[in-house]
Image 1: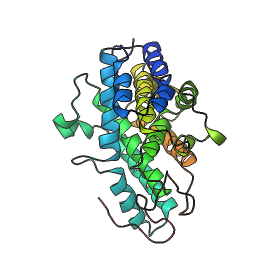
Image 2: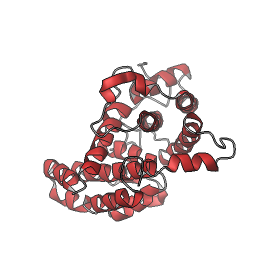
Image 3: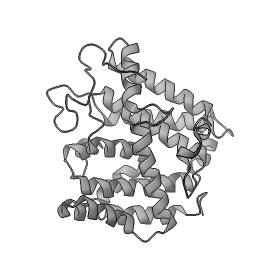
Image 4: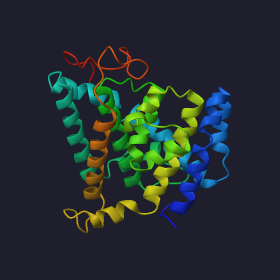
Length: 276
């Protein structure tokens, strides 16, 4: 039994059942009914927790809210500070998020906005919010439009790490060349992406709910017996590496549906406007 009251097997089964509905949702063409199907899987409190986690990752981790700056603002600010060099900006974003992970506890101070009916421990929500924003900012700096639903799903898949390949197979989506961002290139319709996102949220709950972070903390030589901030830094570093691999740099000529000149900063010369 995990820290949220659900075992990893239970969350994995919920993720697999939901992923299995992706192609059905793609054929339906009805976003509202697809979302209802994603929510209707009979997991009770587990389903509600996954939905709330998903909403916060997208609405807060990418779009920002209150004192938590958006991924767009973070990326643009870093690009300006880096003199228009997107790769240096990515390194800066990664360093900043690892520092925040080490500090820990800042989400707790944001109060009721992050309160969930099925409460997630503050450090768990903090970790996922940081990972989401860091990945989305990396995608933006590589020329992707993070307002596009396909790109947002690719961001969530990056958080899922090793679980992502299994989810994509169960969803009937095969990653060409091994990159998760091929999901966006396949242009899955919005209904299918809604269902896929819900499946990802189940897997994220299961990975932390079963104490994966604590186990990894004991396995990391430098961290040793430390938990919390030190482990978050290690895992955020893994996500940062994955994000760089999964979002290769895009140019204005190959952005297509994933990038789009209107949503991404100009990484070919000069810093984008914006900031915190």
